[in-house]
Amino acid sequence: MVVIIVGFYNGNECDNADDRNYRRKSVCGRESKMKILMLDTVTFGEDISLEKFKDFGEVVTYSNSTHEEAVARVREHKPDVIITNKVVIDKDVFEAGADIKMVAEAATGYNNIDTGYAKEHGIRVSNVAGYSTQSVIQHTFALLFYVYEKMRAYDDYVKSGEYAKSVCFTHLTPVFNELSGKTWGIVGLGNIGRGVAKIAQDFGCKVLYYSASGHRQDVPYECVTLDELLNKSDIISIHAPLNDKTKNLFNYENICKMKREAVLLNLGRGPVVNDADLARALKENIIAAAALDVVETEPIAKDNPLLGITDSNKLIITPHIAWATYEARTRLMDIVYENIRSFVNGEAKNVVV
Image (cartoon, rainbow, N blue to C red; front, side):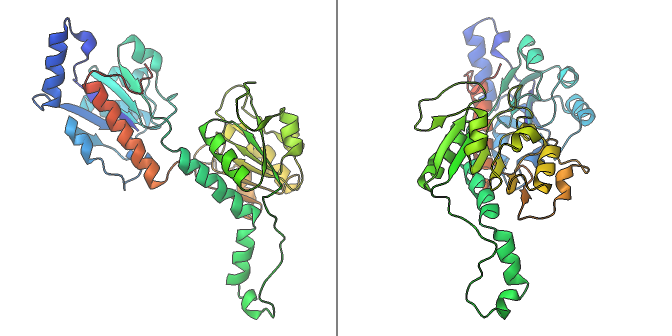
């Protein structure tokens, strides 16, 4: 989400500290109001209250905005601050609002913002990091257990009426396994990756990790080559950012190096996995299953070959929701609020440029 504040006085425009302090006081004391424009509130949910942003002045919200709509809405509302999550804030948008002083990114990544233009014109850009770590870790295990313990198959068996006809108290097909004693490979050992590693280890897994950057961390897990990770792991979870070294990392050639009983989880960035190659590998039973929260293009393309795999025991896809627990989304907007408040008070908090 992007917040644009129009007409707010930037301290860089002041000639002396007294003038800057007066301007800040006038805004915080409501003698002077600023306008905040939120361009895509749908991305953080209608259940999250935005009332507190009225502390800063007038708040204008839109559920979603195309690029053309963003330009028109900035021109119409003349905001001081823009809040955005996915709407692109480029030169056209900036030039539509001559008084923009801040763009508040309601996400960690900010590649949707022309930070070069912002820096050149003295416009503050802030982001939010670390708000969804626990949420993504939780969803990692939710996805794993759905496919690893064959939850769909057993639920279907009961609800089909077959269990009611059975002469046995239990049903033993399809077979599922314990995590204890298995090898869990991780691609991307940041905060989320380390959190997943700790829990996997608590389940009795041996944890390996691969660093696409080549950076070895001081952690109690073995750093291995990509081929070693692929060959040895029973579960592989991706928590890596997208860059030149991770894009298309899981292509058909590399997926074929995985164990046939392996499960692949992607909770990092969609293009780390080649969707067409994964679909092919699943159809050919190269690996046992995959669970994805991200895909190459979002929303998913109508012709994405993964949509052809309707067996939920083999593939589950969630619509990029790992980050989106209520608590995480609440933290997100709390931090966006604090980023704007810090800007108003002349302080630096989560500053990108």
